[in-house]
Image 1 (cartoon, rainbow over the protein chains, first blue to last red):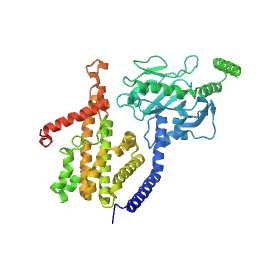
Image 2: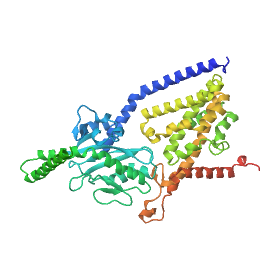
Image 3: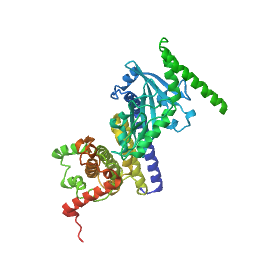
Image 4: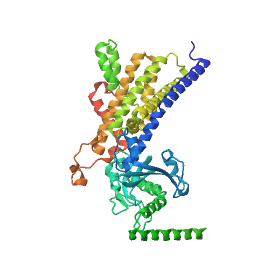
Length: 265
Length: 225
């Protein structure tokens, strides 16, 4: 057989391409369900981790179904019906302007308390960073957070996925005293107060990435969560008179916002 | 993984003639792909920051190289000379994608650790080099040994460099902290990790140091001037 003739070369290449393509597509399609399951379990695991529940991947489905009571998609402060938040590609959503963004939100019930779990996505020094953050019922106090990264420098920026870094976020506030959105900043050389945490020395770009990610992602939820947490206050027993006052204040705020908007229009 | 089975076979199988053993042993020292042939330097820079990914990378390269050498050796009389490099690339790429898919399905955590590095195997010039230089002209068994030997030689250097870099760069090995917390300057001690070890140039310098030590000890490698 003349293995250097043109026709042989063509036939060999064609056969090789077909065989390799068939093999790879067979492998890809037959392994696809297991891979998808792994990815799903991992997001359940991460959602649970943000409300400080640590489970193995195998147990994640059961725990998720037990603890997460609602899966919502929020756009412009309103619930969008008929969408599965787990299927939303957050990496694409965070690049859109705030009004067009579809924000997945998970609501957890743990030990009789309600927590809001928010997925995060942003950029570090070398590649994407992401995570989940959970807020207490007041829609401001951080209950738990975790982060991960694709390719940050080990020992420097990569430290964001260690508990030493993300546990600092617990009990910080994303709203300031007057209820305005302020987010939490990762500060180089020591953070203090309600809106700052300590940065990673040598990981400045990644730290700044976390700050930007929090600011950008949380912004899409603030309106909805504020509305939701104040409407929950209304559900409380009416006898407690003190609670009525803040609600009235809230109403005034909403009204004045509307006036401003009308002026702009 | 494969080295263990080979050692077991060694006792019973006559296949391990002195010549065949040489195929396996030479790349570990006298003909090491990184320090002597100076191949595969690029991946040695990228994944030697920590020990764990370096070990998993080495194992993946052992698999891809052994399997690839076998395939190329089986096909060596059928591969058209003019497109042989393309054929080799196709074989490597197919194997690497296969490894990646299987890891994602069955060893999800390992595959997360490796992330982009597994794809980097495709660009590893050692594999291409051994296909071209050895598997194209030798039998299946010899090619298999050559593949395992060279991948192991590559792995040994990778592991050496990563131990060096992880220990001096972050004070850990395999993720476990080895330096007492009280030694660190932050806690009033005298020690500080060398952040430069984590940067790619230090991998090159470490490899150079290994080459120096190896050449000083191995008479065969000392060139006559």
